[in-house]
Image 1 (cartoon, one colour):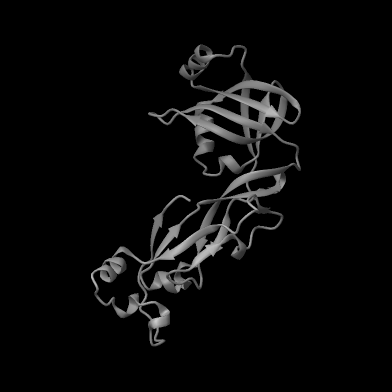
Image 2 (tube, rainbow, N blue to C red; image 1 turned 135 degrees about the vertical axis):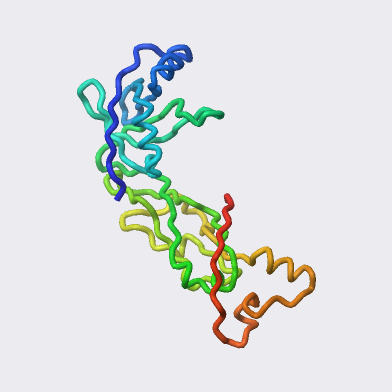
Length: 227
């Protein structure tokens, strides 16, 4: 389960670009807390503390308790705006939630079982179509990650959401299609050999065309694409 974070904040008396620039010069980041049928709350937080949280890698799917004016706001980060050149955080949006609200969060994917994938052992390449899954879950039980095994996948195989065992209490936010998460594709060397009319080595021939002998293992490679 994703850990709960705590972030101290102060209220903002002034709004506008000029006031926001002044705050950033002081090492503060403007932010807003909204939702849960309450008035939006304009705040600012310490940039160094925020950056440390961002670097955890799971800030966007963690519950953040914001301490301001002696009270606490249970929130979920919804958006962080970064400077296009410096990558410094410029503004943060936080959504107020109840302790057991049903929320939609983007949870990182961790692939496992590479050594049990026939396609990767034969020199195929993992084409990761998605790096995160949008899941619907209880705000008190947000998973840190979703582990997805590649065991048994061969070259040409696709892994769809229907084949994934999700963490208990979660469900996919996308329900209208059985979307693809990853595929095992031929390496560039395999493609080049095929285009040149050459016969690929035995360990690069699909399993259906082999004699059934075990293939030597090679180091799996990974490429990344966006859906």
